[in-house]
Every structure is written in C-alpha cells, then in structure tokens.
Image 1 (cartoon, rainbow, N blue to C red):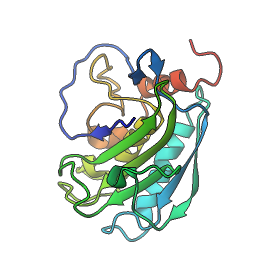
Image 2 (tube, rainbow, N blue to C red):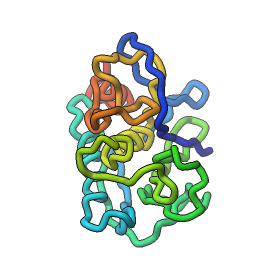
Image 3 (cartoon, rainbow, N blue to C red):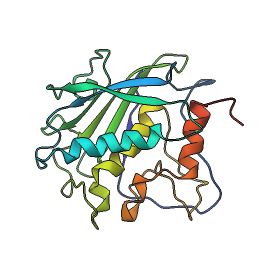
Image 4 (cartoon, rainbow, N blue to C red):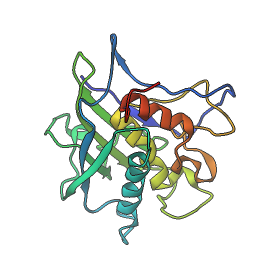
Amino acid sequence: MKRFGLILILLAYAPVTLAYSVSMEGSYVVKWPYTSLTYYLQQDGVSTINNGSDLNAIRDAVSSWNAVSCANLNIIEASTIASRSNLITSGVTDGKNVLTWIENSDWDFGSYVLGVTMPVYDNYGTINEADIAFNGYNIAGPWSTTSSSMAYTDIESVAVHELGHFFGAQHVIGGEDMAEPPTMAPSILPDLQSRTLSLDDQKGVCFLYPESTYA
C-alpha cells in the first residue's frame, strides 16, 4: 500500500495549542518497525546547484531529526547513488529508501508541489520502504541553500518536512501554536522557520520513536 506526503505553498493557520499528526492504518500507527533507517542520496542533486550544497542541505535536515533528544531515531546515509529512479516514478519497490530530484516529465505533481514522499506499508502500518522526490522539473522558483526571501524553495526546509513524512509524521492542519508553527504544517514557513523543528514536531517524532516510555 502506498501513501503520498506532499508539501504545498499555500496554507491557512488556526491558532490553538500544540498538536502533531501521524498516519493510521485501521487501528495501527504507521511507522517503521526499527529506529535506525538508512537512505540513499542521488549523487547529482538538482542540476541548478553545482557546489554540493544541495546534498549537504539534505544531510543537515537529517541531522535536525536525529538530534531530537527524546526520540530514539537514527537516519543514516548509506551511500550516494547514480540513478534518479525511485518508486515515485517507477512504482517499483527495490528495498532502498532513495532521495532524489525528478527533472523531467516523470514529475506530474505540478509546479507548486515542492516534494513528495511515498512510504509503502502493510495492513499493520509497518513501513518497509519510503522514497522522497523533489521537484526539479517545473518548480515555481529556483532552489536555494542560502538565506533568501524565497524561503519556500529552501532545500533544507523542504527536506526537513519531507523527512517527517519519511518516518511517519503527517501534516498538522489544526491545533498548532502560532508562536512556534510546526515544520510539519502543509506549507513551507516564511523566514526559513521550517529548518527548525518546533516543540510540536519534536513531540511527534518522540511519540513514534520514544527514547523511553513516551508520556
């Protein structure tokens, strides 16, 4: 069974209290059965950035989730790979969790979708593979790895969000604290705020993969 995690540009907020969201398959929480997760990073990144900062932005995003102290989660880069193919374009699982840019018409999600995450899980909610693709085809603005007013195309921001979907977090569409909006809102936040995990985001990953009994 396949599910998509999308990140869009537009969002209306409702200022309430902290909340986080996870996926359910029937009565089962969708999550990985273990806490050390490996991924493969496509070696060329996005063609408009040639200094390697695009790949390092993804690595920085991984580090943000790994650093949450109440979570027993370790996302590890296995290696870089040459192929841009993943199950989002091919529909075929290969046992590898691949992160890549799609730079041709295989991207059919439109210009306002920045990234897509597809976890594959069984009827018990157990994830066994998840791939992430970033829009390198028709994005409405240039990808960036530096501070910019065009924060919605900041690679690290989008990667932090998509990695949340990668391990089971979902969009927060109500109940968030507007003083500290969550990275897992359906939209990139202004001023590069999406790079930094809110307390809400941290509670979500700690619920899914607690360092000790979660309360």
